[in-house]
Length: 167
Image 1 (cartoon, helix red, strand yellow):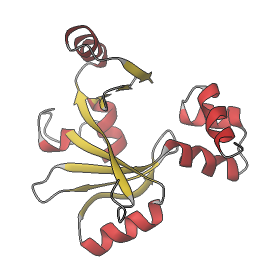
Image 2 (cartoon, helix red, strand yellow; image 1 turned 135 degrees about the vertical axis):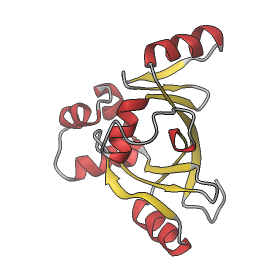
Image 3 (cartoon, rainbow, N blue to C red; image 1 turned 90 degrees about the vertical axis):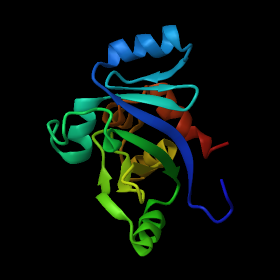
Image 4 (cartoon, rainbow, N blue to C red; image 1 turned 180 degrees about the vertical axis):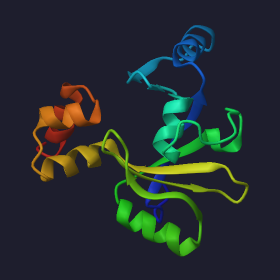
């Protein structure tokens, strides 16, 4: 990450029609290794992720029927970045005059994200790092088990993230 940057590139997200078919293709044909399988979205070790397209439309636009139904459109592929400081990131993006798809929004798994368009209309998402999300939820009084349930993350990963500060 550049010294003056609040966020760093994390992964490319492909919105797909059928997660199981795509998961099979990317693991068996392309040799991708799954890092985390959350059902409707899957992260591979290579920094590629796939999402159920209809779920993605609902999360991003509030309507799984939003868009033109073409999963190859510019808004059905996104570049994903992560930040430690969502407030400052949003402030900088706002100052830069980007066209927002949505402002800072809590996703169904509690992560704060913002989505906007690049000059050619490609969608970019900046999300708070999940360890930052977990610590934010813990500071609000949630237990590790409640955080695991709310974020859909395995409890052992949540506990590891919470223990990182103690080391």
